[in-house]
Length: 227
Image (tube, rainbow, N blue to C red; front, side):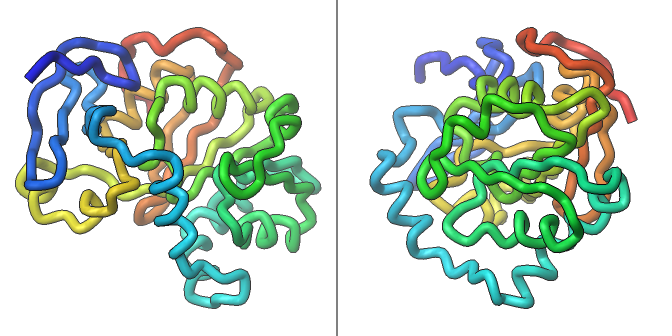
């Protein structure tokens, strides 16, 4: 198999982590991202067809409770009338509504359902990105964008399930979604926090908050974990 560079840190030091009859999963030895090689990604049309089949309704109380894992700890960190962006909001932007209900000014962006590039020209007190980062084809560029959208001391709230180890990964249902192509561990989150000079908090099950200490548009650099 030819060497496939890591799409997050660009390191060529990647190795096989797992394989099934559908896809290969590689792991970067530097930032520890697990990823599916680009040749096995769905087309954009096939990817959208999977999303169109999701049933996340705005009036779904169970979905609201799920999103509250991130919303509640993030709300406790925000000033009054903060400005926020829900990045990858999908066709039913319930999370944006939940923050609007608490008096915050919300905007939304999604490449398929709310493709409004003008929303990416501002900076925000907080950005949410729930069940999105696992779909990133180009996580390096996406995280450069996300951290660049934050004001000083701004918050980036993410929800995604985390890789534990190879044995757990082999039995993990999360990897079986064909649109899931980037998988993060605590080590990868720590690498992001150090690279972008942010504080990292894992605030609940699958819920992560980065807090910007300084704005940076530079490519990620190796660093040590900050808590």
